[in-house]
Length: 207
Length: 207
Ligand SMILES: [Zn+2]
Ligand SMILES: [Zn+2]
Image (spheres, rainbow over the protein chains, first blue to last red):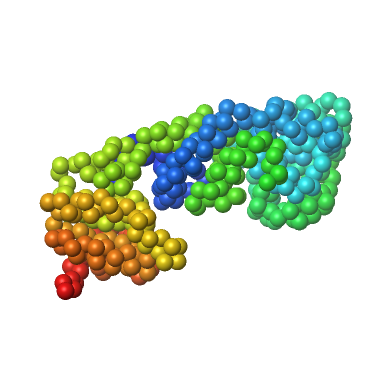
């Protein structure tokens, strides 16, 4: 990485950190750094400050796991939302996609990922404790599993259905609409609406 | 932009500023923000600090116009470089590309852009004062014009040749190697070496 040492270790470090952002490679990180440094007061400093503030103020909601400046988050503290219906998603970005589509009036549970045999990710790494706590207490009537239509998403849905079978709650899965191999984030609003409308109860083998 | 208001104005602002980076759109800016917030202490805070430091320490070299933490920059202050040969480039990224290729042992002049009839960018907006000052003083024997092979790059080269004709200095242009319509940044090292090797003197109409 010695080639842009002319900018000093500061510039090298900035480019290196930028290049780790999803969507940016080394080349676009260099372009991004230069465009920020071209107008430091108008562009670089405000972004740095926004990052500092985000780091200081944004946290994971202790109830659902999404990111917000309040804890519990605005959704979990909203009396106008239907707290009896919990929609389980993989990532915060999935929650955002559903909120953009304005398709779910209930609350959420953000797992933070899926089970993964390949990555060796087990149940203990998913944010499920607060889900089972909520389902175990009164008032939750339905859990909607809105995980991606991937192998890992399906495995995670199965595992959750198993665990949720112990509780007196209807478990549904978003159905048609999520394309095979696809994740929720990235779907158009119409597809999200269709997927949620077409949700169906999960067959329970109560035996 | 109300759809991710669940993260608060802080998150909205972070995503908005990130989405202005070249190479990032709204969607990738959201992904970038989430990946940073997933590990705030390890990723978000270091990047914010690197930006603050870059903003505080990196400046434009008063001699050549590149970005560095020292002023004059490391290249301009390097006694081992050939200060009699000045390579004129459009952007700092072009200087970096030439330095990566280790093809130029002289010094640089970073114009900060090109003349542009379309954008109404005239000579006064280019960083040329220090170029003419350097060429006017003793010791500069050659100016290499290494601008992009674009319409604006060619117009700028012509204008510089005109202005430099008054001085006792050889003016050359990088020749074969820079593809038509191409800019320097983005070329492979071999092409850059070939282009610089194949430079030729600019015809002077001394009359
Ligand atoms: Zn919450
Ligand atoms: Zn310099």
